[in-house]
Image (cartoon, rainbow, N blue to C red; front, side, top):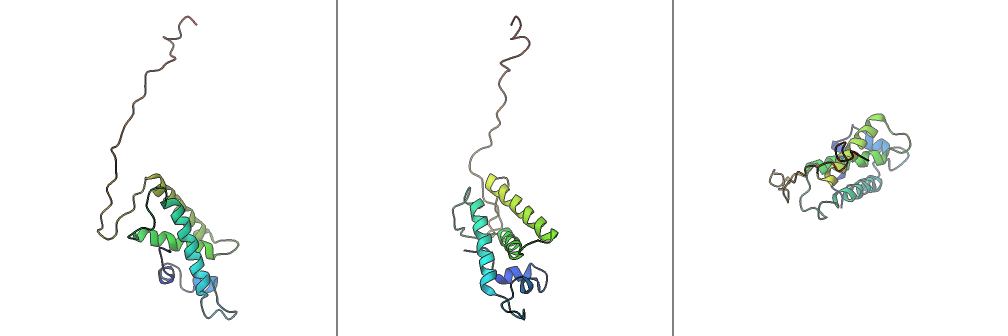
Length: 141
């Protein structure tokens, strides 16, 4: 399951870029839908590999942020060979964000209510124990 559609990808990329990256024929007049859907699917699998650490999949509601990330990753996958600098930068930011989701630093918003889900558990701060080896304790050794 992809988090974004081909239409989402088209809205989030510069005009004509998808046609250039995935032409159906030599004339470049139509988009190869299968190639674009494969890139979106590959991007969703990458997303799922990070989400699975903290979320039951599939998600019941897809946050807008995941649609954006899905499009960013798919755009990166559609670029073959050397990728433009802006595409690489956006990809790296997206992967960093996904890592933060997996660590629990970023919490996915429930877009059906506009509220963030509550976190389970309390925050625990642990102080350090007294030093075992200090100048005072080691005197005479």
